[in-house]
Image 1 (tube, one colour):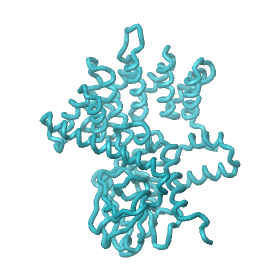
Image 2 (image 1 turned 180 degrees about the vertical axis):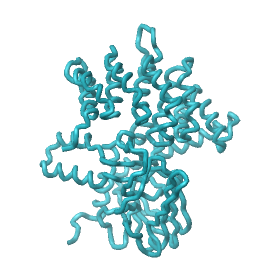
Image 3 (image 1 turned 60 degrees about the vertical axis):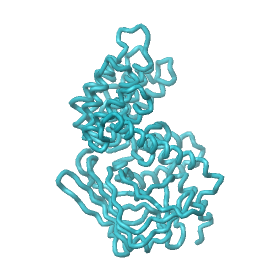
Image 4 (image 1 turned 90 degrees about the vertical axis):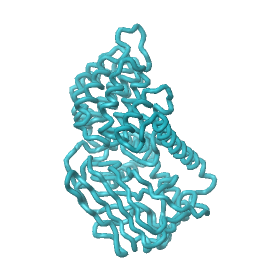
Length: 460
């Protein structure tokens, strides 16, 4: 049967559906809310990730790390692609597993291209998935290697181009390790929808099938450049405005990274030496230049575990203003969300420092609430909630903060407790009270949402 949708229309629908998923489930917070974050990586928030630190078998879903301004690319000749070799290596401690995805003209047993709408004879999407499970764990290191025997012609949203013949390699981490995908937000959205109940149930069933027990590999450190050859992509010109906005944002991020390296060199630090780079980034973090400070915050979380002591030192320096200390908190939170450090690494310095902030703030004894201190305190709660088991020590303090006179502090504590799930069940009585008997509608809503998560209400 012939597909009634024209080719370009099907591609647009697929792009919209994928973008809807990213935004709905918070996979692209950097694209929408954080101008200092890179947008070339997609990382699911920690509350949607597995809490299991030991290896567990999951299906794999990966995309090639192509450098492009959109989320999709289609190669026009699958035969040419499969004439090469694609290998994934998963390293865990002293062990390493090699997985051949395709070679010698065929996919390996257990692998296939991502099953979207067929786009034409011989075409293939740039993503691949397994239908057998592999052991995966949060701190695995990933290496992807592609050897091409032929230039690969392809088409994207706005342009056509080639991936030239040659050898490509990239290292990375998982963008998502999912056991049972949390569909709370989608269920709430569907509840308000006028769609038939059967269609709503089918939507939920499809999402479960697509995302449960999956490891997503879209967080790559090196991108592979395409040779753009010109010509119109599959996106109509009238729909190109959002893509141009995204391109501008990515270019802005590239310039920020270049400026950061220049600033480090100007201050006498070698940006290629890890120790010197972290020391220099710390100086920029506490400096007066807000743009460089925010860029340093982003760069420091990407440095991972070695940067934790310096971030803790900034966080605990009471002589610094709260806006600067907040940069350290955000860096620690993103480091946890992006799994750039073992959870145990946060327990010695970061967790006690964050606990100190949420207990006392930085405006203790002052007659008026300092908004900078309020933000610092609330973001410290979020950071602790993002740290999994390492942050559970904060639960008694967060429950106590539900009694605070400031409704912003109460709401922040409720949100953080909700992220901690059933481990925070001792908060239920107070959350029930706040969800019913408070003058703030905002606090009521946050308390109700936290109650659902803390109770671990099963999906219907």
